[in-house]
Amino acid sequence: MRYYRALFHAWGPQHWWPAETRFEVIVGAYLTQNTAWTNVELALANLRQAGLLSVQGIRTVPVRKLERLIRPSGYFRQKAARLKMFVAYLDEKYAGSLDKLFSQPTDKLRVELLGLNGIGPETADSILLYAGNHPVFVVDAYTRRILERHEILPANADYEEIRQLFERALEPAVQQQAHKPASEPQLAAGFRGAAHPPSAMSTAERTALVQVYNEMHGLIVGIGKHYCKKSEPQCDECPLQRFLPGV
Image 1: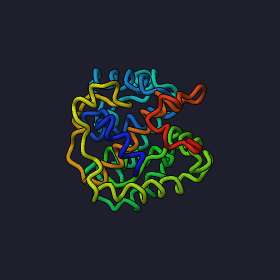
Image 2: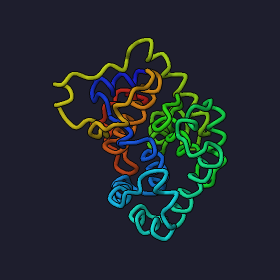
Image 3: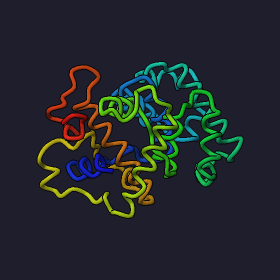
C-alpha cells in the first residue's frame, strides 16, 4: 500500500491498457508475449489498417495473411494460430460475444482462459483486468524483480502467491481513496512512469478496485522500465529507493 501511494502520488494515472476496444486489449495481450510493446504496436497498426482488428476480422482473415500482418510481434505463426483459437473458443462458448464472455464469474472465466493454448496466468489476468474489468492483479517480470530486490518474495515465487499478496494488500486502497490522481504540477515534474496517452479503454468506467489493480500494474512497469532494470538498476534515483532493505 505504501509503494502504491508513493508511486501514484508522484505519477498519477498510467492509462493502461492503451487500446480502443476490448478485443484490441485481448489481441495485444497475445501479441506482447516474448516481445517489446513497440513491436506489438506495429502489428496492431497493421491489423487496424487492414480493417481486421475485430472478432469478425480475425475470424475471417486467412491465417497466412494474419501471420504476415502480425509478423512484427515475433512468433507470428504461433500467435496467429492462438488468436484463431481464441475466436473459435469465443464463438463456440459465447456465440462470439465479449459481453457474454466477460459476464461470467471471475474464477470460472479465469479457469477457462488458462485452459486455452498459449494463455498463461499473466495473459489470462491481463485479459480479465484490462478487457473484462475483473478484479485480478497482473504479475509480470517487473513485479518479480522488484519483490526480490526489496526482499519481499523471491523472484521464483509462485504466481498465485504474488497475485494474492498484491490483491490483499491493495484492497484497502479503495476505502482509503489512495487512487486519487496526482496534481498537474507533480505530473509535469518529469516522466510519468510508464504512462500512455488516454484511450477509450484506459478511461472506460470500472470499479474502484479494478482501477487500483490497473494503476498498480502500470506503476510497477514504470519502475521496471526506468529504474529497476535487469542490469545496472538505478536504485539511488528510484521513487521506491527509501523502501529498500537497509535504507
